[in-house]
Image 1 (cartoon, rainbow, N blue to C red):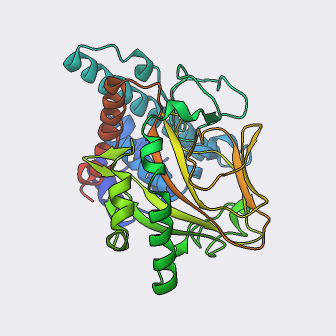
Image 2 (image 1 turned 180 degrees about the vertical axis):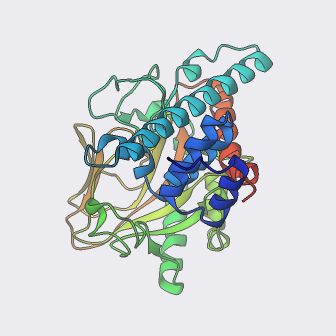
Length: 344
């Protein structure tokens, strides 16, 4: 005879002791779901998935144990259903409060957790996190669609001077690609300064280096930067050393543009976005949709440097921006609080 499963609270106590045990997460989540405790089950499964993506992928491996595959299929389905419904509820709530049409945001897809099959509508465009199918899409945005660009461009030489002074006098450069990244295509850049960055803002926080760039910070106030609670999500100087190559990859969402203000551009440096190859011009802003596959290279004998930040897609209305921020906030709050839900 098989032993009955321990009570749900006892299972949760086991998980609290080993929250990084992905196999245990699969089992505990399944038993919680069977007990009707769906949100706790999804929280356990999502934490397990953060530790090891096999939590949602074991179901696709025929050689895996049948029970593990069953638990994995339940975890994947429940997690996708729960988070897809969370998005729908968040946008509906925002729409009722604003009284505005946000149907394009409502149709948005969280690509890694959407509950139904979907297709990307345009070749080469595959955002990793959030996708709004109804947004117009073009790899490189026309300069006239960025009305704030000219004002920022007028300060480009001051910005370059601040960068050059900091590089001469301070050890501020860090690898853009972390040393522990597992993906094979990033191995050549992983943990190196071949693609280096000096961050002014990172993770919605101003860095210690920002105070050395007063003119840059003043100039950035003129740009339509994506901000959360008034703080830019990210802004940094990006340096590619001679011979460095950023491999083809996709960005996180098509609701934002990545903006480059080129500061130092030797010959034989370029970026490909989708099927378009684009050369930088010092002091001339380039805005592109990084949800299209893109890559960049420096085949010269000196450094290439650009200032990078994100701006909103120019076709979004202010109300749609607010709706996107709201659904991001609801999702992030749940992820941050799921540990409390489980007593971790």
